[in-house]
Structure formats: C-alpha cells, structure tokens
Image (cartoon, helix red, strand yellow):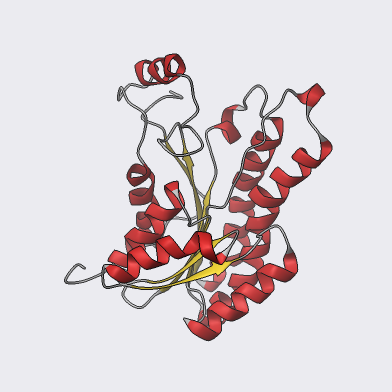
Length: 250
C-alpha cells in the first residue's frame, strides 16, 4: 500500500467486480486505501476479488446483486452503507454481451443487455447519489465501450446500451455537478479479458496491427484511467468520455 493512498478510507463500489476490468479496478482501489464493495451477480463470484484485496492488506467485502433489478440494488446499497459506510465513489462496470444479427436477435437478449449495461448503471447511480448529495461529494464513473461510439454489426443491443451510458454520463454530470459530484466515462477498446478471449487469432492480430500502439489493451490500462477520474486530480473534470483503445478508432 502506498505511503499516501489517494483513496484512504473512501467507500468505493465497483460493479462487475468478479473478473477482468472490474476486478482490476477493485484491486487497484483497495491497494490505494479504499474500502471496496465488490459487487457481482453472486457473492461467491465477488469473493475472490474481495479476498485478493484483503490478503494484500486492504479492506473489502463481497456482495451479490443483479444490477438490473431495482429491489436488489436498493438492498445491496443499504448493506454497503451499513457495513462499509455511505458510498463516495461508484464505478458502473457490470456488463454483458449477447451478440446476434438484428433480424435474429431474441427480444429477451435485447432486454437483458439493456437491463444490465444501462438500467443497472441508472439504478446504482440513483442509489449511491443520495449519500453523495448529502455529503456534497462524489465520483461516478461509467464503463462504456468504443462500440457505443462507433456501433458494431451483430451488437445492436450492446451498442445501444453503451451509447446510452454516454448520454447518461452527461446528464448526471449536469444534474449533480452543483453538489460536488462528478460523472465521467471510459470507453475501452479491445481489452484482454474473458469477453475477448474467444476472438479468433486472425482477428486479434488484425486489431493489434490496426491500433497505432500495436497491441490489445490490458485491464490495467483501463483501471489506471478509472482511478484518475475518481481522484482529486480530476476534480474539475465531468461529463467526459475518454477512449482507451490504443488509438484503434482514430
């Protein structure tokens, strides 16, 4: 742990914290003094992340929650407040993809992707912002995607949800800025996670060759930007979406 942690004793909520980008974000907050609420679809899934933080000398707890369900979100944030304290930093990272061509897409796959990726962020912001408004301080960070800015064939549901997050980010920034709360977003490109593990090698090589930096991203590349936005260094930055894609979409 650093001598002067940026997030000492800050209560940090990270959704989708069981693996990939979310796990890296949660672990990094824990290493910098945050009290981290690791949220995943089940408490068992979040436990490995919370344990990793605890084993490194940090403070963390695991929570199971379907962020697309309002009653579960309300109950989870009540527990977090009781056990760790009122949320001061919220990272909406929970997301899933159910790709299919538009004409073949099942209605339930459209609805589920929108529920987790977009409605989930709305519900979590609603739950966390009450305490933030009272404290006149807060940091909200939404993890969107370059697919939300450029679209993707076979990803109409995912693109719509991620584009919606960008609009939500701007609206929340305008609504809550007067209470000392910032709201920003990061838009990762192709990052080495479970979600991209099934990409054919030929496609991976093509992506790496197209990106000016010549490689796919790592979860740590995204986590570093997230922590910046949530730190005091970004206290006068709000409503922004920063693309983290190695220059792929230039």
